[in-house]
Image (tube, rainbow, N blue to C red; front, side, top):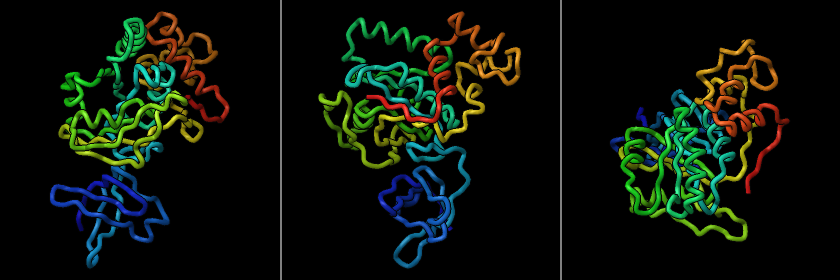
Length: 289
């Protein structure tokens, strides 16, 4: 039995790669009726005459629902300064979504060269508050020195996520022109990017694996377990457990340690407000245009 990693899925055809070969396989019939494999899965497969068949999906350390990908070490949250414009609230919600999936978030800011001095000052202040809480922030644009970005990607399985048009495919093209991934101009009428990536795929880059994924404009928190959300958010974690009540949700409870540090400016107010909105919200989808 051979082992490999699923790097691409198109229809019912699964590309599997290891150090020796790259093959296209289909899942065993019984597997299709159970948990379907996703990109990033470590699988066992076998050759049956002239074709290959996936026999088993090995245990996952995590799985993102959207994009559908498993065994992710980190998520590069790609957010642009312009076209589409920078949104701290969208960034916060992506940070929270990634954290809920037990994936380490890394903020990757694109199109820095297109921002005006005033816009840069505003964005720097908002990102600086997140950096002070332990979040890594990278800036990239055409002609930039992407040494830190390459070092961040080396030896890890990463996923690029973010709004359509934020520059995910362009970023991969810049790291390795051989990708020749399709890019597209921003739709001026909609004020957001048209979807340019049609399927999730892992690419070998910077001595690691990177997934470029279809862009999206909605974040759905309704199916996720938010029970321990406060403990999973890096900026909140140091203060969880210091409240008067052990089951404090950090909403309206008295003597809340988290609300105290928010008032002191140690935790960004915008991040706390977005956390509060997610916890308090009735089931619904939040859409960004």
